[in-house]
Length: 175
Image (tube, rainbow, N blue to C red):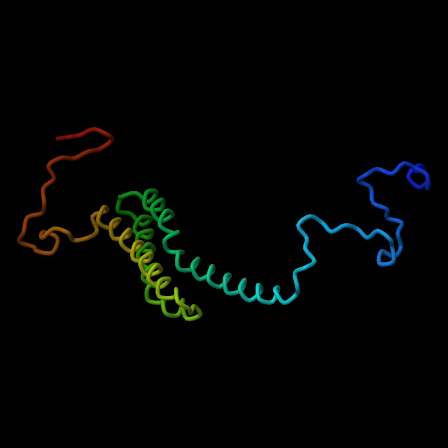
């Protein structure tokens, strides 16, 4: 430490002299850091600030539009974990799978009231299709659980119910 303070001490290439009191009046100012350019004016920053804001608004509006499509893998996992049995938990899961996208479909205009520009119609279409995919997934789950009336015997009393040709349980086929 004492050697570093001596005026005749050997100075390393990477050391900076911190003893300079006024850098404006010193003979050798510090070099600019790499990739720093003093030629850029402050006028450019105002233009980039406006374009950054519009780019950020566009990015956030596309994130909002793609939100329902990003929920599809999660909904598929929930459908798998709920199972096909008729009990309270799978029924509640299917109910939420149907109700959430339908509520979002009816609130599309209020969701996109802040979005404007040339891509607003495309974003609304993607948002609508994403919610429609989630509704179709919920209806498929209802069908696989046997909750949808898909046979004529489901709504007509005089038609015989469909007979099962084969029953499976525990990985064994019982004919």
